[in-house]
Length: 218
Image (cartoon, rainbow, N blue to C red):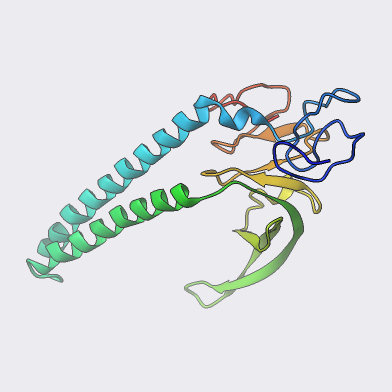
């Protein structure tokens, strides 16, 4: 038989789908901490994404204004950049901030929800020379997620584990459209859960994020 939600092949004795977490009302009651949560459809997430887009444009606009004003002031004070070239530089840098905000919005718009598995995670040491010429070591944390539909996503964090410690190799995960976060299918062994919206780590016993008030996906 097949799951009516995602089309995954399932055994007749299964009480829930191993891919999407849909319950079939058979067998034992599904654990609240096992399965992909339908709470991602809560209106709070839609509001959060809308608010994030607004703040992204506001922040980019502020940076653009600062660049447009600062370059002429700097050029006039130092004499290194003549007018009106200082204004042109400011307009160019300011426009770049606006374009970045637009591209990020477009990227979120074309993003899709997909399922996958944490295929690998590892660390390595990279070196960077400082101003004095000394080689400074940095720890790079790498997390690789393989998509069910093919392809993979690789994430890197330097000198900070980021999401590295939250996931284990073999974890089934779901990437939700418009969010950076991966939801774990099985959260039953976790003491903390990551908020899909603001990515804060919250006690597993909570129902909503204590920071952004979005529902926790469990």
